[in-house]
Length: 408
Image 1 (cartoon, rainbow, N blue to C red):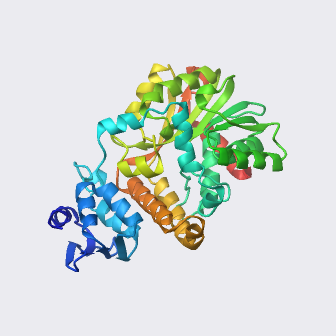
Image 2: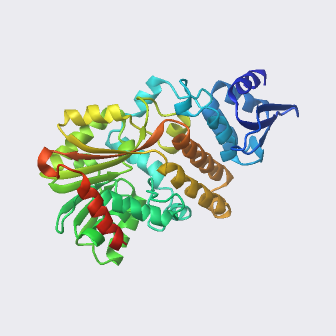
Image 3: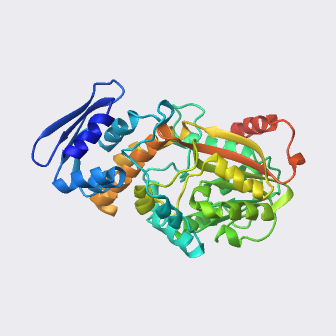
């Protein structure tokens, strides 16, 4: 325990953290802070201490999942709040050593997302059951950052506002052909058809999502105008007036950034507009931590803006607009986390306690990533030709106001 004790003594600055080791000895760290709830953690065995000391992020996650790191006062989010909240990224020149990242070689190998690997990666996360996602997402099954025009808005309103915000940047006209790369359960594609009178092709690698998306289109009577295919973006053919991609860029893998943008350029009409919505790094390039890579998003990587721009430049795409969302994902995941906890009994019945704790840890860590670590969301508008949109971005605001008044 001496090494972990030394690490925590020098690291925990805000909030009260009490640890009771497997021998019953009590250790206290930090100081009272109104922002943080006091947390008490009991360690079940000596192996937990060694796990956390050798690899804090993955070690703590696996110990919590296995029920050997027990949060007795507070919950896992309260614990992660203390660990991350003491070292907010913009307040410190250093990095978060407690939730450290993995090695560069391991990261590089994990990013080789060829077609078969991409299919397996998507199945790992998205094909675990549609009923599971229905328990904590909004009614439209939007599994990406919502747009909170007011932090007090309910999640359904914030997700509707997100779709409206996205549509306003596409400058849509009736009859246009739109490609939705990584269409999820089809909510955005159906929204665009319903509110903007466009035809949409949505592509996904998730069989579970595909089934729901097709069913929703059929129930709405628009299967002839909103079509969904199980298809890798690299295999899409044709020409599209507009291309939209929400929450998919993070799954590409760094070696495929240029491949992606070259494909977007090849599919986009000369006067077309593309809108890429992606989680991001507010700082420079990094690596995906071991926990996320192993358990949540194998092959995933959140890009820095410098990496995105370098890749899109090679495809001769013009970034016409860039918006940074700094806090919207904090509000979004807070909603998901509370809903997730409220359905604990159902989730445990579907899977087991370990699965429940795994996803609870994931949501807790994700919330604090977007609040304290250098993570955010970018919405990037791309053009092939500089005259494809008006010289002022006011049209986005006008279109958004019109859509907000009628969007469903």
